[in-house]
Image 1: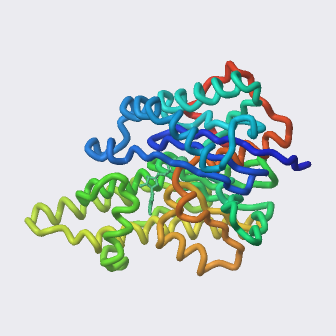
Image 2 (image 1 turned 120 degrees about the horizontal axis):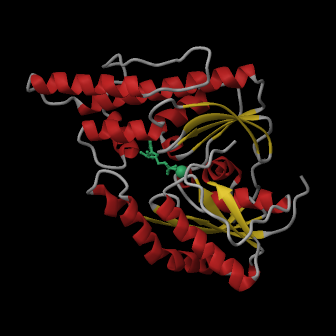
Image 3 (image 1 turned 90 degrees about the vertical axis):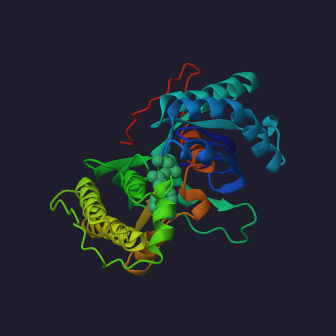
Length: 342
Ligand code: KG4
Ligand code: ZN
């Protein structure tokens, strides 16, 4: 791919974060603004779609303004606009998409619709503007494990923007399992960080929860594990015993991480990749990060914590590589709430 010199404004509103960022040449973050709505959704125990859309409407333009201001740039300095087209909540995606279209039309800028999962992959390409020696980009072919609230999948990435889906979850996404188990343990939303915190005080071997390995496929399943935790919680409650939350959290987390790790390693070896990439909200998990970075012979790329969860810098980065290939979308571009990566 012939790389061009370009500054992209990225916009992301697929779920409950309103985000905008300016990224230079696909990798250098000039600004990265995320307005989270977590406080608004906590009382519902999860994302309330209509509340999310309405909040995006209120915050989208202030967030875009802030991203431009922090980069010390105006729209005249931007070469293209990348926006999340899907997957995500339709009502949320539409807000970012319409904001992007308005700016693209008003400024005659190319509009590029980006797949949110592709954005998570490109979060591994990013580095802050003041980095003295930029890190080399992840090498192809690579194995990408995407683990977020909505997805858990393994993709073989042969080159820029070339994805081959090997497998994915048959039921809950990894992040969804964290969120549901957190609710069982009476921990707040989002469940991932809450389980991680509780697990620090717990013994990961306390409960031998099942690991669904689904041999000879690249698929995952977390519903059996989730049910096993529920059964344990109910049994303890029937006996009027208080829940050993740290031990339950640590044992659950260990089961998720070990299944994700074992399958990713097997695929990495079978496909003889040059690097492993782990991205998506669950890649913020400290147990997962430790396992993936200390127990493998492959170079492992996991984005810094600030780029693991939803942000717009990753959308600008993925959009840049489309821009270099000359991909431009029309202004009647629709959102795709169920858009697969490959
Ligand atoms: O990528 P993301 O921000 O949004 C989606 O695209 O879904 O991922 C959100 C998910 C939530 O399920 C959240 O519980 C999980 O990522 N998560 C974590 C951690 N931080 C966020 N899961 C485990 N450990 C964490 N530290
Ligand atoms: Zn995400």
